[in-house]
Length: 96
Image 1 (tube, rainbow, N blue to C red):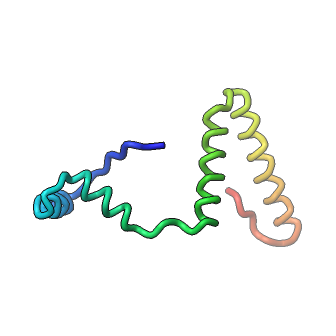
Image 2: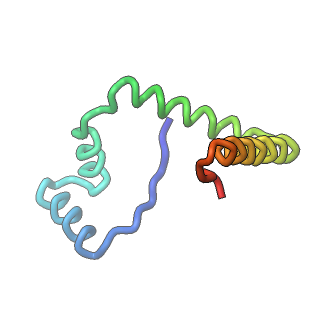
Image 3: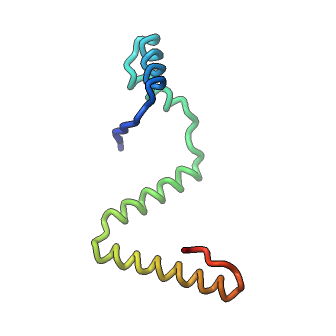
């Protein structure tokens, strides 16, 4: 899997990365890729969590409009029930 990122840099940030690339005789993209490659990898547990979140995002993207409305309704019911239980216990509501 690959993604294309577009990021907004300040003039100073752009100048710094361009200067580094020029000093190394490389393209800006190569310098940025190397900087990312030099970053420590996520621990296994974090990679698993990210994979789970990615799968949820993919599931949500595949939902029909009716399924999305049903999921929203279930979430609203959950919030209301959580708030009701907290109020019964004399605590403040969590969800607005």
